Length: 456
View 1 (cartoon, rainbow, N blue to C red):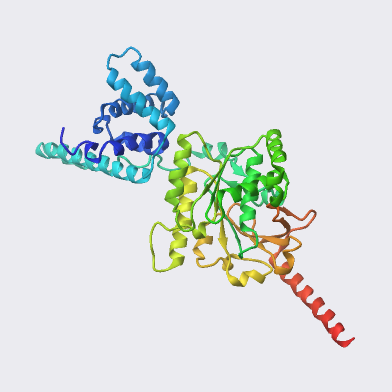
View 2 (view 1 turned 180 degrees about the horizontal axis):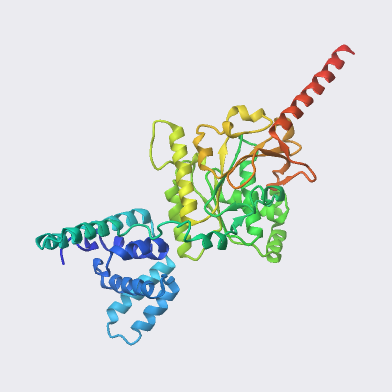
């Protein structure tokens, strides 16, 4: 074999991560099966495992899970005489299962896919030389086209007229509800935020963005969803106390004193799982989050909702002269994450200074980068004037909604002591123009009252 026709030059750790990537990303494994052979691995135990992994796919058109692969290997090597190979496989699979350290996974996938594509083209060129010698020129063109197309994503897209049954079979959306019935109803969010979608809550500082994110996380847990909550400002403990407060109906400053009540509440409820992960402000990129999620997947934790508090203070994977370009890139990468993993993502965005005393916060109030709104599927905003904070009163505005109606505003009550948000009972939805008229009427009444006081 030619020296460059295998992964040996990348080292043992790199090769092991390639196989771990197969397990973590079945779509990528389906790409690799077209252009890679097990002989590319230098280590015999990786050649063996890849052969079994690919053979299973060719027979059943899906890849085996890690527990099933372990069973297949155990049965196959039960009577074997190669004790060294068996021990190497057992030791490697044990490491994968108990300590799935797959950092730099995207880099490994990119480099190995690029290597295999280049090798595929080299093999095609060698075959082309023989075809040219026999004057089979048309075959050369076909051969090169096939080599270039190999290793592309497995799906070719939706064939509109031939695949029409798919559109009706999968018409139901899998969603994570917000817990606000007026928002989750069919003509607005149609059940909540859907898989692969990104929702943004925007508000001025101190108005309640983080409380809203805890609220939607709790509502997902209540219906049995698994949630990952990333925090870049608050500590993991502080966020955990907010979840305790919401789920147990105990003010956050009393949670620690009522530990026994909290534990009893959880024993009586059937909730999903919650992982809270803290990163320092400005340190985490979308790649950081992706790697963390892939580690959780290998440990058996499958998230149903990702909450990020909040995207504006994440680090961009690329530096620009302008902050707005970096922010737009962060949101685009979050959108790609949601679509690749087929998971809904809720995050928050800071509103500008003009929004702090506004009756309604709109898309134009999203600070630094309007491009954030362009990427999002749903944009909600919370507005609370300073005089309203003590009462918990405020307004929730549907600024953008790809799945249904928008431009609607609801009066809300936000209880920051328990991170609970609810739409005021029996309150009717209002349009933006109705809010403006209401504000003008309130201002006129206030001026009349002041005028009477001055002239009395």
